[in-house]
Length: 172
Image (cartoon, rainbow, N blue to C red):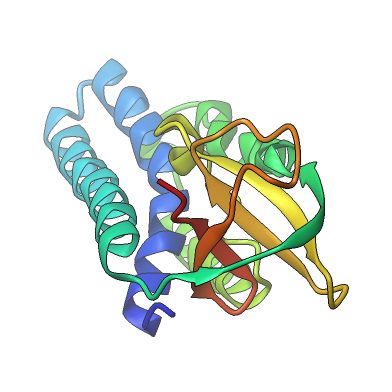
């Protein structure tokens, strides 16, 4: 399983689109220096997400997994859309109240990290991964992260455990 630092990076990568939207707003208002730092941060987080998935796929402990049911879970990403578009509702970037924004993002990040919802990360979806709810024979439900479009329960036979309830498809 991943360490706390890697989980924190995955939570931050879920917030990457916010930085990109703020960068767009900053550029349109002439705050190019601010936009540059936001884009550098976004690029770092996109790279970190890609590296985490690549390293996990190559180094995480593999074990066989049989599940009884599969259900798409990608629709959970829709809940992030309003948060991602919220910077567009600001009249001017100079009007952003950072005394509200920063603590709000911190609380949001902590909620994502502690509620097992950080795996619903639209950035990961943009990289071609899909989320599925799978139920084991023991009736435990996990989130399976795979690059396949699953149609039946026989398509994934080997997984690695990213977190307590998140599995990564390691079937080659």
